[in-house]
Length: 132
Image (cartoon, rainbow, N blue to C red; front, top):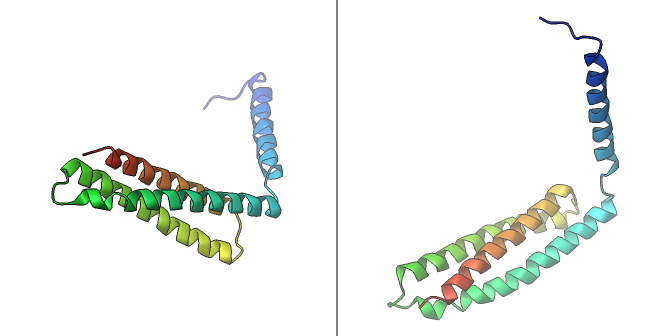
């Protein structure tokens, strides 16, 4: 095994120092409980507003699903409903955590993920609405 030369020691110490400083800065940037609560409330409001729009878009597709519906249309509607259910399930879990006043970064991330899934559902609903 090779020994570190004198020139490599300062570089190694510098790397360790930078890693320690970066870790310390990450802890210093932890949001306050009030900031987390605001972020959760904002993310929840975004989810609820988007959910209502997407729900109406999906319900508006029901008349198109008659006996003459194409496989492509059926697939897009099924895709929209699948994303919507995933988002609804995650939103319900998040709402329970909110009701328990457990505001943390994970809750914010989950609400943002639910919002993204509502957007996916909405995208599929829009594609379906443009099909014959």
